Every structure is written in structure tokens, then in C-alpha cells.
Image (tube, rainbow over all chains, first blue to last red):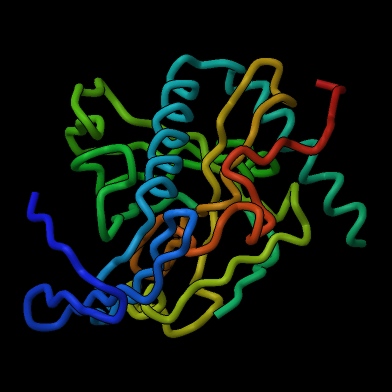
Length: 89
Length: 155
């Protein structure tokens, strides 16, 4: 990993069109970064993406484990759909 | 674009994610298969037709997720779809957007949760899809990765 030391207000250029700016550093160790990048470049917080990944995998595992069975879901769905149409009438 | 589409039964269709579904490397092509009974078609299986590896290693024999149309259970649910996503999905008419959420099934069924924080957004005209990754926290958004099902203990 490339490690660079920067001061507040200094920038790092990544390629031709991504600019990273150190905006502020607080006494509790938080760093505020400014990112300029083309709109189509995805910028995600790692922990958010990790939580979604983990939930997707857990959901897939639980779905293939087959609990509850399809009949139970069908029954639940039918009942909910009926409730819905009754309340919207 | 904010979408709060009225609930409607899910139709069978081929779905192609613009990037791998988070957690699964290579997972792009899926088939959405609604439950057969029409009144139950708020639920569907989303089956992947690509060979898939788990993010971080390990293969998966098959990938099938249980998904649902969220507005049947959470009537005030709304999704803010950003402009870049609208462009990427080539959505021209808001009515073309289908919003589904991934269910984490549990036994008993009413202890299940659904991921209302990062819904699936699909262009029903083309099948192009993404899973939204919000730029705000679950608390700020008001919807959780593990949103509990409304209580329904009758089965």
C-alpha cells in the first residue's frame, strides 16, 4: 500500500480525474476527506458495503436452508395481499 | 427520483445487475420467479444463473434469494433513487422502476427480516438492476438492513 503524509488542505490526485483533499482533522482522530470524482465513480464507505454483503450472504444461506417452506410464504403472502386490498377499498 | 410505487404482484423476468450483487463475485444474471399463486406473488425467488464465488473466498453451489415487494408490508416505504442510478439503469419513466427487498427468512416466519436499507432497483423494461448502497446510515435513512416483519402470529 502506498502511504502518503498530508496536511490539512493538501490534495492527492488519483489518475486524471480523482482528487482527494484532507479537509479537517479533529482531536478525536477523525479525518474529514473531500472527494472529487466523475459521477459514475462509485464511492462507498467500506463498513456499509460490508454490512450489506454480510446480510446478503446470510439471507442467501437462510433461503437455501429452506426455512420456512414455500407453502408458508405463499400463505403469508396471500393473507397480506388480501388484507391490503381490503384496507384500500 | 423518489419512488413510492404502489404494490403489485411481481412478474417473472430476467434481471441483470450492473455490478456483482454485494457479497457474491460474478453474480450478475438472475431470473425473478414469483410465487405461482397470484395472490402470493408479493414474494419471489431471485435465482442466479452465473457461477458464483463468495466475496473473500469460497464457492457457492447455487444462489437463490427470497425477495418481496416491500410496500405490501411497509406502506410508507419510499426509496430515493439518485440520478446516476437512474441514468445507469436507463430509466425514462418512473413507472418502469420496480423496487424489491431481500428477505432474510427465519423460522417462525414472522421473525424474518427484510433489508429495507439497500433495496434492489430494477428497470422492468430492460431487466437492468442494482442494489442501492445509501450514502447515509441506517439511522439517518430510517430503514434498517434487518427490518423486522410486522407482527403476524397467525401463521
